[in-house]
Length: 138
Image (cartoon, rainbow, N blue to C red; front, side, top):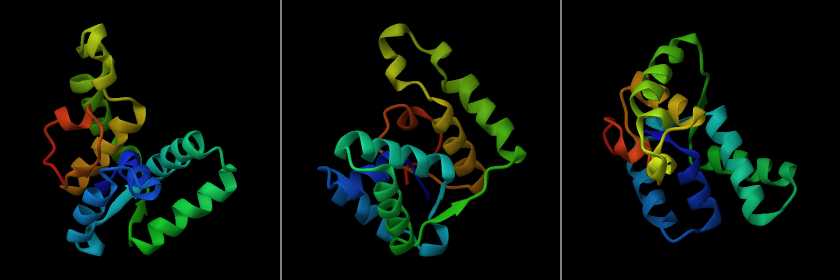
């Protein structure tokens, strides 16, 4: 399963759905838990906005969480470009009316979609846009 930044934030911050997401994560074999450096960056930035703690402290906390949860940070390569562009073409802002643009995939979401698709897995997330894609739920 690909672990999205929204899930990482929920689990670390103790959000209401954090326990449910942690249970789903634990149900996946450690060898199948992946994320990307983009998701890690988004998680650090999101937790910084929530806590106002120094970025360096949050980065350490996120790195520790990833290690403890056995989540591998996979590299993104040119092989991810076409599926990411496909995700943008199918689920990007230009496909939705203005009133629903918050459900559109952003750059990070498009690459998360591409990584999950190439890995043949679903995405663990709480993102409204990712829920609308053709990927199976994690």
